Length: 139
Length: 175
Image 1 (tube, helix red, strand yellow):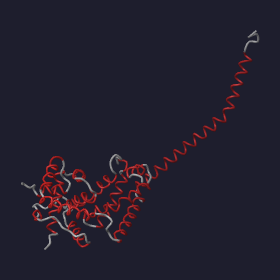
Image 2 (cartoon, each protein chain N blue to C red; image 1 turned 120 degrees about the vertical axis):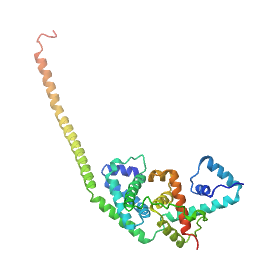
Image 3 (cartoon, helix red, strand yellow; image 1 turned 90 degrees about the vertical axis):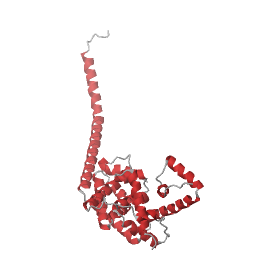
Image 4 (cartoon, one colour; image 1 turned 45 degrees about the vertical axis):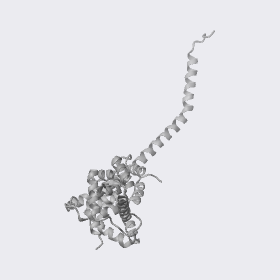
């Protein structure tokens, strides 16, 4: 039985294979206990590497440093010119929106109040029209 | 929980609080990445701060169809690479195959000493190999994703992974 190159087994442990190559290697591993044992060792190595990079195993001093870093970033962010400019733009947008809303409200109130006047004018125009009608009309 | 990408959009519209949430979510892990690549705690913190400020300045260019974290890591990584290129440290990889090619896989006990020894050995690898390993094991990225992030082909990513593992084997080989 011919065995795959050790690099191929490492590729498999590294999850770098797919398609026919992966299927062929799996087929070989089903029939070859030696290669299957090597793959198990390589997977153990991968487990150790994942463990080395896993979060949450750092000490209290690391927690303290992480909090200090967050504070430092937030402080720099607050004093950055971009943050100030963006805040000014946001304030301007709010001001414009508030002014537009105010203008709409005032106009609505004005139009609502002027409607009786409008009605009065319409009535006046109608009575003027009636007055101008010929006296004998309709007889 | 609000998605990172939605927070980024809110921040772009002027909601600084939304960006502060993003800082809280990513600062620690991003610092771990920068520290791993640069090999220096203080310099990593400088790059993290710079990366967040740069991301904040460029929020208008962020495309929410992509992950915010990928975008942020790319910014931080470029800052780290620039720093390493300045010291001519980024491109340097061992020319010859390390002796670990013939060595058996690492067998580590799960105790703190073994993990600490492995971390020291990782920190002694060239920066490019450290970056590849961090993306592979801490960020759980595929070879294609690592390649895109580091401007490498998947074939080169494979070479880097093999090389890194062989170097670690040779450095941690039982005496």
